[in-house]
Image (cartoon, rainbow, N blue to C red; front, side, top):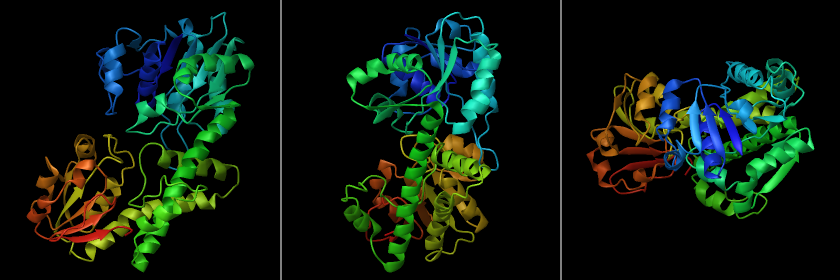
Amino acid sequence: MHISVIGSGYVGTTVAACFAELGHEVTAIDIDEDVVTTLNEGKAPINEPGLEDLLANHAGDRLEATTSYDAVPESDATFLAIGTPSNTDGSIDLSALEAAAEATGEALAEKPERHLVVIKSTVTPMSIGEVLEPAVLRGANDNENIEVGMNPEFLREGSAVSDFMHPDKVVYGTRSEWATERLHEVFEPLLEQHDADIIETDPATASMIKYANNAFLASKISLVNDLGNICKEFGLDAYEVMDAVGLDDRISEQFLRSGVGWGGSCFPKDVNAIIAAAREEGYDPALLEATVEINDRQPERMLDLLEKHADLEGARIAVLGLAFKPQTDDIRNSRAIPTIESLQERGAEVVAYDPVAIDPMRERFPEIEYAGSAADALADADGTVVVTDWDEFAALDEEFDAMKNGVVVDGRRIIQRRDGIIYEGLTF
């Protein structure tokens, strides 16, 4: 099949590359000429394991990038993967996606055959019928051959390629058997290789499945963090407790590692968006509000533990880990951001290190010092906080001997307790 993917950010680039890997002919469309050039060179505009290999294999062959919508009417389906950033009230900004939807409709205005426009972006259920579908049809001059569907993504940064190629579920949100069959044709090469559950539903329900999925996982993490905080107060190891809890098959062992909290592009944005949408309908989502509140507290608790052992005024504090999770350079909603901000408010001098996320964090905090290695960050430090659980931090040992005051507060349980340091686990 020939598939158009509009938007070449994190989701769009991953989806386009994986569709090409499945054997489809893919046209990636983006307004950023630099991104288009990067893709056509077979390079990845983001740091994501396995993605650059796919782009190198398929660019110039099954994958082509362009700024033009000319390929849309020639394709068999079009996927919209435009970002929906948060507004100040937590709701999502649909303006860029709505503009792309209308431009897609304009490209399809004269198409005589049926065409499926698939929303891949994460959007609230009501926005599909109230904003996005009307935008597509408005652009297409109400061409009756155009249908709009929803196919939410469940990709985790750091493992997005693997998640796409080995999904737990694939959700088809459509309003006709033809549209469902068209989506099945798109995913058939994948489903022949990997057994996954197929959910066939309507577009609004498909959208809600994505929000419910992320809200549930975020709530699970915050609950585990809350329980971990309680364990810390009792002098207990939260990890030992949750290892036992995870043996209950109603709960499972996943997402039970307590720590400094969740970040990234999905959980914060999606939880805040569904909270805002619920409020707009007159419902108070108290549990989801508590989920966010608990998450926001964790960096402060980490620094409170640090301050038990070190006067932060004028202290040199190493921050290990800047990306919101390992295997990515994404700092969006990273727990390192409120950590650095609070350290500055408490009068500390910050020296930070991350294997891949220094450049994006330098744009956010140009005034702090950045080290070339974890060892350099620890040298002469009065204390350190561990925010991201990169594997290389687990190998740190003698590097702690170079600290002026060996206080280590571990927000991810990645550092081994050892002689010569004052070790505090956030929840253990």
